[in-house]
Image (cartoon, rainbow, N blue to C red; front, top):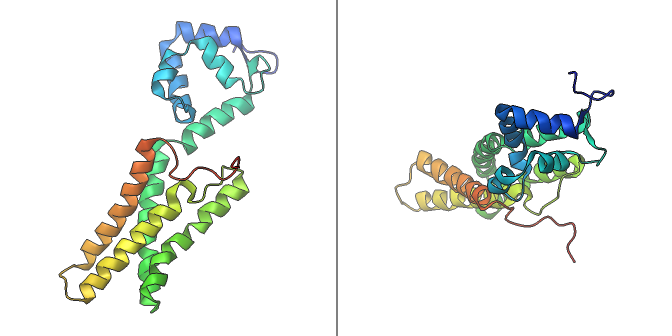
Length: 200
């Protein structure tokens, strides 16, 4: 606390000293920055404490204030693989529930298959209200739910025509398709469809 500025922000000298004298502190800072680093973990590992400070000092004030620390923690939380995993599992379950609900209401198979994509509208609205990048298929929601719904409808149609596909098999295939597309996007490192802003 004695190294803090008068407004309780962290100056560059104090930050660099803390990084040089405490490897655990530097490791925690790098861990928190990792999800927001577009250049990847290798670049982050090669950054000096001065470079890390400049990256964290968003307003270029020469100090890291509470707002910048809050942004760092929120970035770590919202962009973490843990949240992505929970989000993907929930999306897969909602995909199956949505398409099954559409089928049980007697809707045409084509309408039931597209119901998964319509559900992703909630994610698009969330991105609009939260000021996030708006992507057509925001974080692959529409593509993943559309593919998962389509697989469910196709396998159900096959079961109706006499192919031995149990309900659990259809559910796992549908959820597996949704999860696979989300995993592919995650490990690819960029959204399947680019954000719409900045396009010419």
